[in-house]
Length: 179
Image (cartoon, rainbow, N blue to C red; front, side):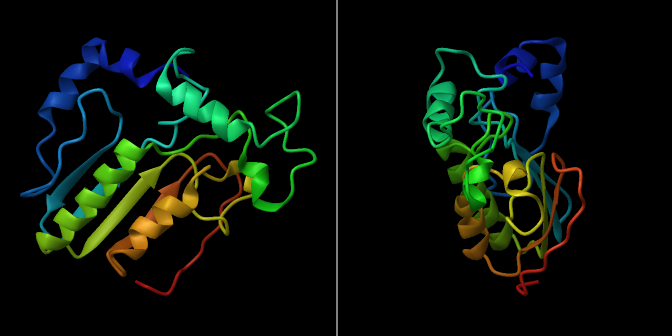
C-alpha cells in the first residue's frame, strides 16, 4: 500500500487523462484521486470507489487522510489495531486494515449518481475493494463509513443495480429490494 498520489506521480498517470467523462454533466474526479466513473453505453455507468481514501494504509503520516483514519481507529482500544478483539457488532470494522471514503469522494459520488440519473442512465454498477453493506461480510471487513455510502445510494432508489467488492474472502450476496 502506498499513497494514491504516489501512483499518479508515475508514468501510469497518463491513463488518468485519457478517461473521458462518464456522460454529460458528470463531475470529474480530482486529478490526485483513485476514484472515477465511466459509461460505455448511455444506459450503463460504472463507478470505481477508492475505499482506502481514508486509511492508515498508504496515507502519508502527516496527511489529512491519515488524521481522519486515526480518528476512526480511536474506537478500537486494542494495542494491535488490526485486532477486532473486544469490539462488539459493527464496531469490529474499526481495524487498521480497513478504510473509508472521504467527504470529497462522497460528494463526487452524490454528484455522479445525480448526473447519471439526469443523463437517463438506467444501470449503475459500483466497484470497491472494501464491502459497502454489513450483510455481505464479517464486520471487520466492512467500510468504516458504509452507512454514508448507502445513504447516497438511497437518494437514487433503483439506480445502483450492483456493487462488487473484494477484501472479504467469503462471498455473500444481499438484495435491498430497490432494483
